[in-house]
Length: 134
Ligand SMILES: [Zn+2]
Image 1 (spheres, helix red, strand yellow):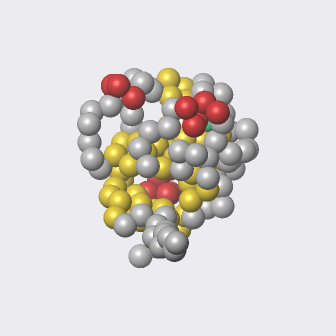
Image 2 (cartoon, helix red, strand yellow):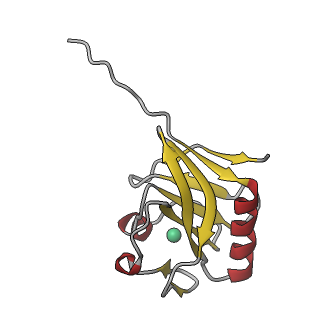
């Protein structure tokens, strides 16, 4: 038997100005974690991030940044969340995976530059991320 597996090439495309906003937000929050909601659209496995929302009722500390998902208004343009790891690791923690929201979780590690940003899926697998610089 032959299985034809259609494999979705998933990737995350982020607008340059959105990336810059994320990086400066994380810098301001340092040494605490910063957290933002990612807005945009997803089509054929491609996740296009073109905006940010500051989450309501967020709590922040050096090791935890979160908000209750139940407080989020239902919005199809919410693709996931981005948060920072001031300790310098870009790997999602167990807590991060338990609190996964949406399609993608982006983690920015210190020192918050263009090479400090990584995208993950709900299983903790890396999703290729490219910057849309137009
Ligand atoms: Zn985390």
